[in-house]
Length: 88
Image (cartoon, rainbow, N blue to C red; front, side):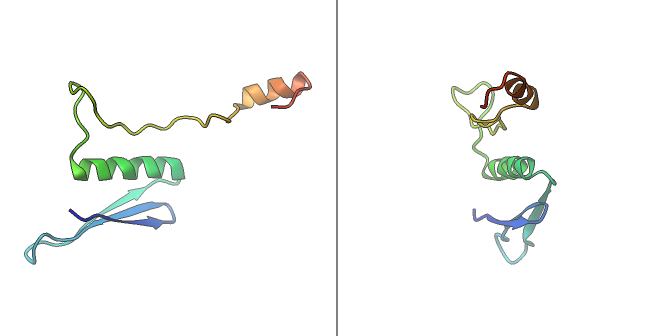
């Protein structure tokens, strides 16, 4: 299986060529104005197309998660740093 992934202004375009002349090209548009969410959705689409993600009963399975960066400070924490006169 060959997948082609193109970036768009608000997400991604995933193309799968036809397996024979009798079929049309499959195109999936992943839209999201948030780039992190668009990438998350695109990766799930690719994982579903490949079909090897596993199930909740398997010893191991593939998951795609969004998590905060290790250097990210929330607005509440940043205000706390400012009021205490410290810098992060």
